[in-house]
Image (tube, rainbow, N blue to C red; front, side, top):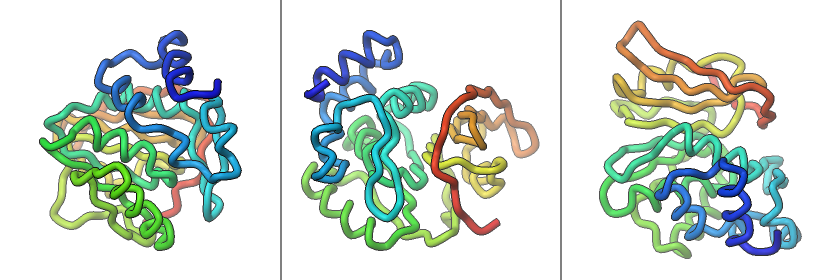
Length: 205
């Protein structure tokens, strides 16, 4: 695949991309803008690529799968945890454009500066990058949806506390992707989708 259109059609034909708003975000937010210049040739292949500071940009089919599980909508307040490349953050911001907004936690200060420039490139005004160091907690905030793009060893309690009741988090745990729905402060529902690989989620417990 050599174009973004070919990539999107591939994901649709594989029945991974299904929702119209997510398909539109894939069409509008070009993966090529989120990889290293040396990897431009590989930008539209369905494979992960290394980016800066030992991070990776996940393969498109995995990103599409996770976004479909998250099922974002235009009226939601979304937290995106350490997507590394900011590609998923840009697509989420496109989906909630001009209505609600996306916050992205990043622990590498150099990437914050780099991706703030990409915000200007796409003229996205409803996304904010927060330098978190190793902390997953945003004081006094709760979110409708939470997307995590690195693998935790267990469910981070900090994120459960920040998830609104009845809403959804998508997070890799070890080698599986989980959807977590918070029923109340004591009960959660989980569904597991195995056989995935992610970089580790590094944070202070």
